[in-house]
Length: 381
Image (cartoon, rainbow, N blue to C red; front, side, top):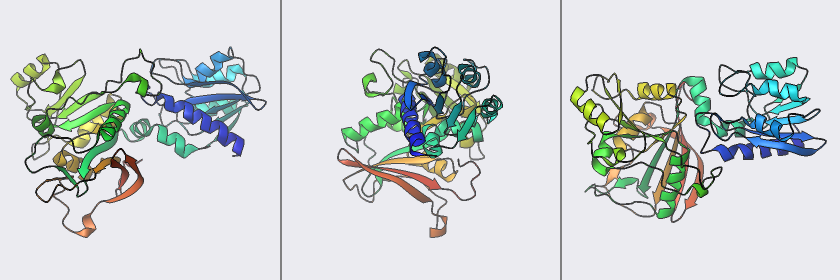
């Protein structure tokens, strides 16, 4: 690896980030073609079904790239899907070197694209800025590797770790700047998950409320991202008049296998999709089963926006990959509601350690980004 390779790969990664809000369920990918020290073409994948980054870059040079080096953030695909294989297109275009940030975790590719390039006599250098390329697609990588989506738990709290007053009155804890930042989290997510407790207490819409021009990669006339709203509701207590059912968005309610058929019919008529999954011995939805089912529906990233009970259950199950906590500069007192309900932690040895990767001011609040440290967790990327 040299500085030139790093510079061009950095540019390719920056291109890939333009697809942060649009490529689902595909990965975000960027490609830069370089010849004689000059960028001759570039491209980034914009949305599923559209040309891949490599195809866009090659089209810009009429598929003639003899002697060029291709800098690609993800191994080129080698199979026919919605688009033709990029590996064959690069070979046919005449590139002589491919610098690839990371191998594709998709079992349909998983090194086969790289092998095709090498068999064609193309020099392949793998692993340039791999950590940054992995950060582009945490959900896609985890889904392909472990059969689970990436789960980000979003919470808002006071300085003393409280999420709502004891009276449970509905009011904003954080500033408008923090709430705007949450809209960006929603926009990049494939699904927003909550529990029936939050639906009954707050009646949220869980929609993306932001201008398209505020999202990189979206033109003014393009529709906003429309994440799937997921409610875990074992007994189907969701009201048919709930806000989450009152717009054109997609809402999925996951309930138990013994749910009332009449309630299923009423909520289906109200616009919801119902999925029945087995409950646990306590009558709750098995969270890991729900997440694995969502992964099979090509859901890459799940934003968990819930109360302390569901958030605590997902955390205790070892299924939270990242926390984003907005901390407001006020104190709510001992009687207010806590951040996580963790009934199984009774001593210091049972506490859940966190790796804090970012603390950043957002308006008058602070945004804390952290990753739980799970011991012996097989599903951690």
